[in-house]
Image (cartoon, rainbow over all chains, first blue to last red; front, side):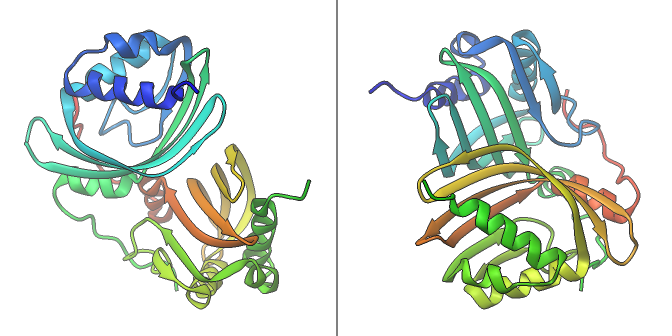
Length: 144
Length: 144
């Protein structure tokens, strides 16, 4: 039984971010990849939708300029033949302020011939924004 | 082949919210269910972690008092034997203001004897908060 594409992709993306070595990642992304990380692009211009390998590698380069991954825990994972979904909790360090950032995300990924062909990433964005701002945003109580 | 527990659970939860008929849902939740919807509990007190069927039914009752589900699209889904994960986009109507709310979420669920035993729900919370506030929150641009 060969290793699932998710594990190779995971190692490669963390290496690209933490060591700024995108070589492995480059070989694991489909040329025509369909990519989206949902979130406030005004604050983080590297979020949002991208199409194609070059655009995705540029996103990863910018993420690598912004944060370092200190640790991650995969809280849930589901593997299909050519697909994978996880819920993950990341402990990051912001490179400018050296502040810790903790963020939870979920991804749904598809692979084609071992390469990432599509991914959608959802982030607990309000929690992320408050941490990066360094102060709570006042919210009215809405629901009963 | 019998129907996956996810589909039964999905129908029951939507019926509980839109028709305020929690009877079906009650039979599909494990007594000791482990439940969490991550998000700002100051604004929405029904978010957060809960344990046990009674606490979860109370959450659903409060959600049913707050919104109506207009439609939902399951953008990604993965099914295991006793597990399921989806990424979904909901079109809701706030019952007090009659305003439309659009929210994307991801869930990872586990079932035991056809009953929900555990679920974790992640929401694109910043987008949700801005819609409910009815105004954008100003964000500084952080990343390069």
